[in-house]
Amino acid sequence: MTPDDIAGFYAERSALNLDDYIELDFSFECAGDPREAAAHLCSEQSTAQWRRVGVDEDFRPRFAAKVLALEATPQPTGFSIAVECAATGPVHAVRVTIAHPHGNFGTKLPNLLSAVCGEGVFFSPGIPLIRLEDIRFPDCYLAAFQGPQFGVQGLREQLQAFERPIFFGVIKPNIGLPAAPFAELGYQSWIGGLDIAKDDEMLADVDWCPLAERAAALGDARRRAERETGVRKIYLANITDEVDRLVPLHDLAVEHGANALLVNAMPVGLSAVRMLRKHASVPLIAHFPFIAAFSRLAAYGIHSRVFTKLQRLAGFDVVIMPGFGPRMMTPEHEVLDCVRACLEPMGPIKPCLPVPGGSDSAATLEGVYRKVGSIDFGFVPGRGVFGHPMGPAAGAASIRQAWDAIASGIAVADYATTHPELAAALQAFGAKK
Image 1 (cartoon, rainbow, N blue to C red):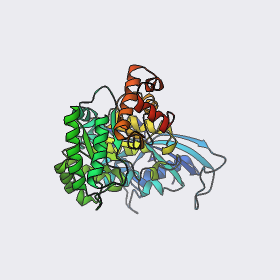
Image 2: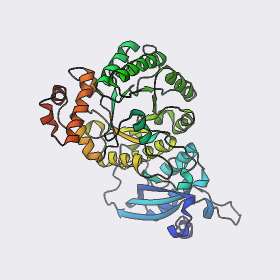
Image 3: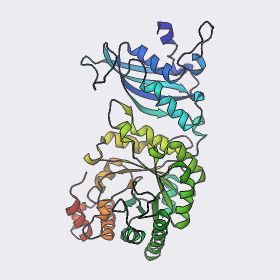
C-alpha cells in the first residue's frame, strides 16, 4: 500500500458517526510496518479492492473499516508462536481498535461473523497471529435484536429465588440413563435444594434416553418436588440437534415437562439460536462446546467474551461458560471478562445469567462467589451433587448449606461441624478454588 492508501483506513473518532459502526479490539503480531498491517486488516474485512481499474472512485469513505487507535511494540524475539509460511521482517505486537461500518453486513449474525471473524481477519497480509479481543455495538444496532426473553430477573422470578446465586446441577452419569432412574436422580437433587437439574451438554435425543420420555419423567419428578418442597424448580433439557429439529424439539420437550432448554451455542450456530429465540416459550441456556477451540490461545483466535456477548445478543437467558480453576484452563481474568459481558449494560438487551462452571462443589462455592463479586451468577456442580458420598439430595443440601454459611458470615468449615452433608462434601471434593 502507498502512504495515501494506508491513510484511507485511518480516522479520528470525532470524524465518524459512531452509530454507523461497531467497534472491534484486536491484538496481533505482524511482520513489517504495523500501520500498514492494520490498514490491510481493515481493508480485508471490509472494502478489499476499493476501486475499479481505470475508474475514478473510492469506496472507502462509506464502506471501509477504520483504525481509531493503534499501539505497537517491537518484538525482537519474533512471533510468540511459530507459524509456518508466516511473513518475514521485523515483528511487532500490536493492539488496535477498529470501527467497522455495520451497514456492510446488517443485523445478520452470519454476515457479522463473516466480516469480523472471517477470511479477511485471519488471512490478512503480514498478520499470522491475531485475536479478536472485544466487540461493542451501538444501541441502534442492538435494537434489531430480541436478546434474552427472561434474563436474570425473569429467571429469578420464575424460580422465586432472590438474594442468592441460582443453583444448577448436571445429572450424572452425563451420558444418561433410562428415563425413570434418570428422573429419580433429578428428583433427589431438587428435594435437596437445587433450583435447576439439567441434562449434560452431550446428552442428546438418544435411543437409550429419548427426549420425550426423559422430559416426561423429569417433568413429573419436578412437579412432585415442587409439591413436596413448596419451591419452584426447573428441568433443563438439552435439545441440541440439527437446526431444522430445534423448534420441533422445543415443542416436544416443553409439552412433556421441560421448563427450560439447553443448546450448545456454537455447534448449532448463533443464527439458529436467534431463530429459536423467536419461537421459545421457556428460558434458553447456552453451553460452551467448541468455544475453547477459538479462545484457548492468548495470541490467536477470538476472546471468549466476544462469544458471550454474541450469545446474549442471540437470545440466551443464561450462558454457561468455562469457569475458575485448573480444570477449565481459562485465566481468571478471562472468566471475569465473560461474567461482566453477561451483566454489563448492553443498550436494550437484558442481562443474562453467567454460570462459570467446571468441577464445582460445596468446597468451591465461596471461592466462585468472592471472585464474581455479586450474587448474580449460577453455580453448576456435577459430581459435587451427583457424586456426593451421601447421594444427590445430600449433595444438593451441601451446596445450600455452604451458601447459608457464606451469607451468614460463618466460615464454611466451621458450619460443616454441625452439617454432615457439608462436611462430607468438603472431605470428598477438597479445597476451595
